[in-house]
Length: 44
Image (cartoon, rainbow, N blue to C red; front, side):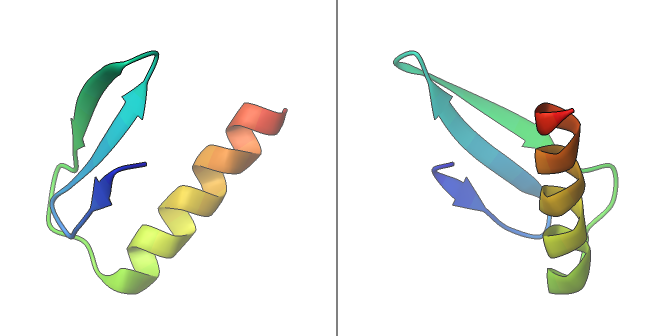
């Protein structure tokens, strides 16, 4: 992960960058829960 804020997350992988935009601005708590759920999805 390169950058995260209340409107998007920017990640780097395999030498490339990607930006994932959130539909709406999100709070710090929502950022945390979103990242946790993304990690859980990857592990399963």
